[in-house]
Length: 217
Image 1 (cartoon, rainbow, N blue to C red):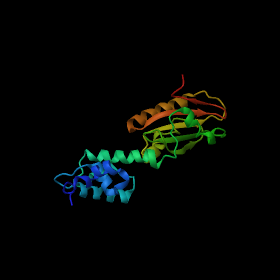
Image 2: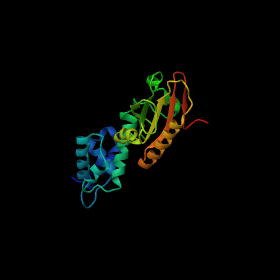
Image 3: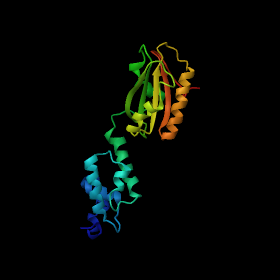
Image 4: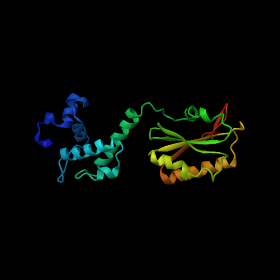
């Protein structure tokens, strides 16, 4: 039965308004998000195809995946993807910290603060600045040639990150930024602009202190 053939009280959006989301099936929730069908397919058929993709791929659904659904217009795809991303940020990954300041980033860097060699690490973040992952990119004296944007942003692209924070330790205990530190920051910042992944900060840490290269006076 098509949605418009049902009594109005049994249609997904009206049912949601009357009873809340818990009373709706997965299919009905998708129908409520999509809203209506078109000449190519009714909303029920569209929702069933989208649900099939969700069950196959979980939350890892792409724009191109949804473009394959007959009848699903370009205006509806962003709505579905945005709904999935909100759920991911505020429900699925709620145990991950939000890193919205240098101080919060430094809390995750305790393991490299007393290393005898320089460790360069990357924190990948989603659009809400919630941590996705932390990775060691390279170990050794920091140079612009050693820390290549390709190595830094490969993981960020795989994580579908919105932004990154990079950091490294100074075994000498000095917080002074070398020219190499500045060159790496500039190079990663420019690469991030091209890729659409913002470099939020580059932080230097020592055993007892830290310095933000992008937020210091």
